[in-house]
Amino acid sequence: MNHRCSFKKKKLLNFVKALIISYVLLFFSCKKENFYTGNDAKLNFSTDTVHFDTVFTTIGSATQYLIVYNTMNKPIKISSIRLAKANQSFFRININGISTRELKNVELDAKDSLFIFIEVKIDPTNQNNPIVVQDSIEFHLNGNMQDVDLVAYGQDVHLVNAQIINQNTTWQADKPYLIYNSMLVDSNITLTIEAGATLYFHHKSRMYIKGTLIANGTMQNPIIFRGDRLEEWYNKIPGQWDGIYFVMGSKDNIMNYCEIRNAIIGIQVDTLASLNQPTLTISNSRILNMNVAGIFAQGSTIKAWNCIIANCGQFAIALTIGGAYEFYHCTIINNWYYTNRQTPSVFINNYYQDIHGNIQVRPLEKANFSNCIIYGNKETEVWIDKYPQSPMFNFEFKHTLIKAGNELNTSNTNEWINIFKNQNPGLVDPANEKFELNTNSFCIDKGDVATGAQYPFDIKGNNRMLDLKPDLGAIEWQQP
Image 1 (cartoon, one colour):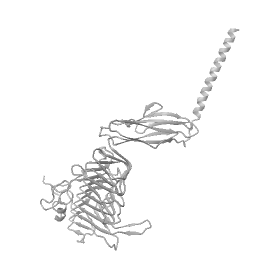
Image 2 (spheres, rainbow, N blue to C red):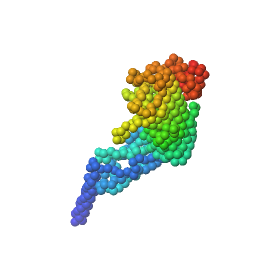
Image 3 (spheres, rainbow, N blue to C red):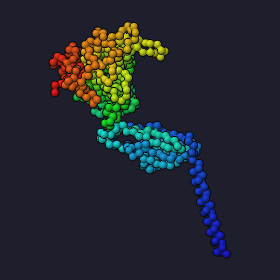
Image 4 (cartoon, rainbow, N blue to C red):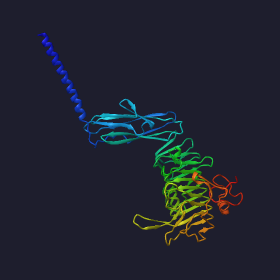
């Protein structure tokens, strides 16, 4: 009897164990089946961009966190959480105590949240690192992908993030400035930039000037405005940032020995209430590789000398809606290499069509070019667009080399004074930004003496008046 009883108890115990195991398996099976699998599932995040605002000066790493929310009434299984750049990333993520670059099958209960810790490691002394380090965390859920951007700063910089400068400020040349999400110099405020400073602009960022910019570099220490991609391949790629925009009301701006490169519009100068109020004086400067225009002016005032403007997708210089402009000893070379450019290097007009379809005409007080080179790979590189019966439309090209086809009428000697047409200027290598005159250049000794005397030193500090025969352009030829 005892043996039979023991056998029955053991059999009952095995049955209970099997029943418990069945219930456990059934529970987890049901739980698995309860994961929401609809393709409309979406995650919510504590932010759409994780910024590492620490600039890496003495430390090479920093940690931030991101919160991921499941706002639905059912649990979900995230098939993958991964860094987009994988093993090439400067970042690592930590999920549930696991440090990785990808974690799969991450479960998140209904109405629950998940913390992801993000670490970035950068050598702050490595000048070959990008100045902005970027990646994103991708979340793959039910066939959909969402991502959160990661942004860190890879060198020692002054960070200017969507900043409004509302008091007179001086930027020193101790370390570069990184402009992220644009910036503004407010009305009646002056931003002074010291010689030798470098300003890096992130993609789609712009410098807005409502007040005054004083950027006074030197030949040995120019002030650089450029995009923030430092890889060599990006040195000549246009369109990396938006440019410098002098908005309506800005005045008394000075740029000397500046280099502006690789933007959409290098310098945009907006309409003034009065042409007697100077907007921009720019000298000894280089404006290179713009998607749209080197200088785009609208009814404003600009005075420029010893400037080089080259390689622009539409216009090197566009002087629109009237204004007052002077260009002396400037080299304007527009051999655009990326697309079939349809527009001239220099464009001058005095009207626009308003939102109601009405033509608005503005006075062109002057548009003077003297001792300049205007050349490029189009048949005609100068175009004058005067509205009929305009009361004031004054322009003058004097001792200037231009490229012009038959459609440009240059017969009026009060406007076209001692010009030179369709002669190759003979530059050393403009494709590689060598804009010096070669030994056989046509431009040697062709300049107006009075203009040369007014601006006796070229962009390199050479005296163009030693032989009393100034050359055309920004750089005086030198005997080898």
